[in-house]
Length: 254
Image (cartoon, rainbow, N blue to C red; front, side, top):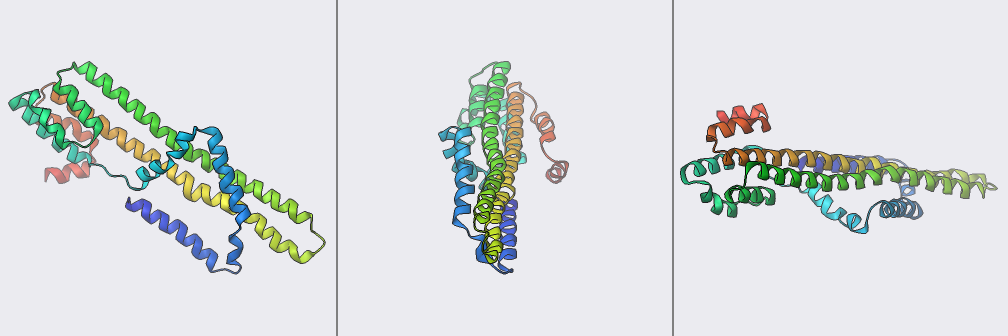
C-alpha cells in the first residue's frame, strides 16, 4: 500500500474515532437509519449517473489507488538506454526478445511497433491515442468518486431534515428533544465524513495517479521514438532526464 495513503487513512479515521470515543454518548453516532439514508442514497444516485459496470468497477479502482505499483522513471530510462545500446549494435530486430522482460502492456506494445519497423509518425499516433483513452478511463473513475463526494453531504442533509420532521411531531415531551436532535444531526455527520474523508480524497489520489502514469507513458513513448530514430544512448538519457527530478538526476550521476 502507498505509505502516504496508509498514514492518511489511519490518521483521519483514527483521530475522528478517538474524538468520538473520548466524549459522552459515543453510541449516538451509531444510527442505522442514518447509515441507510446516506449510504443507500449515495449509491442509488451514483447508479443513476453511471452505468452499472462502471459502478461495480469501483473495487478495481480502489485497488489501483491504494496498492499502486510501478517502476520509477529512472529505472525505465535505464532500460530504454540498454535497449538503445542493443539496437545500435545489433539492430532493431534484436529488441524482439526484450519484450519478455517488460510487464507494462503500453511499453511492450510500443516496443513491438518499433521492432516491426513502423514509421515514427505511426508509432507516435498509435501511442498518443492509447494514452488519450487511458486518460479518459481514469477520468471516469475520478468523476465517480467526485460524484459520490458531492451527493453524500446532500443525503446527510436529507436525513437530518427527516429526523427534524419526526422530532417536531413529538414535541409534547421536552426531554426527548435533545436526543432526537442529536440523532438527526448524525446523518449530516455521516455525509460530511464520507465526502471529505473518503470520496473526495480518493478522487484526488486517482487524479494524481493518472497524471503520474500518463507522464510515465509519455517518457516511454519519447524513449522508444528516440530508439527508432537511432539516437545515441547518451542523447536518449539527456532527452528523458526532463521526466526525472533534478535531485534524482544528481544522485544517478554520482
